[in-house]
Length: 236
Image (tube, rainbow, N blue to C red):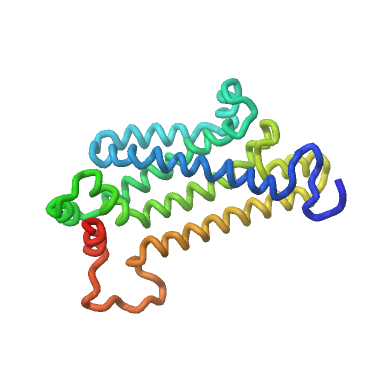
């Protein structure tokens, strides 16, 4: 190991930027999968109100299980691989996504749903073209929490065969008493989380142009309301 800032021990069998890529892959894939799973589950909870409390209870119980316990159970089936790290992260994301989507969809006024039905939109089109767009701020807020949490939790994977992305540097830094490696791990993980959150804030601004901004001028009187604009976009 030489003295360069981004030089890392040979036992990691990777470069610093390779570890960054591994960290992002292990963090973002579970979030994406969790979102895809949460969308239909949340819609069922919206349509069947009695289903929401038990679903929320199950996701909360799963979230309470320590990641190391998940690893112990999964390692016999998936080995010391990225999959072993990503499965718990995907499960943890459900406790954020399900309430965010349910609350966001339930916030859509009944009058808006009735208007969408009168325009000929079926349940599926109404869900994807009216309810989800209006619920986008709440969903993206949940996505921000899930993404930042996943990026921070990936480092625990260092305990199962160097599958912790930048967390591997933290482990080697403690083994070799190299504070440089520890700082590279901690600062790198924090920067990834901040950049991911900033990107999602930008996405929210782009997909919800009707949301109020800090110094935004008042909307002209003849400009359509957000709910009306969503309905007009849905029937186009």
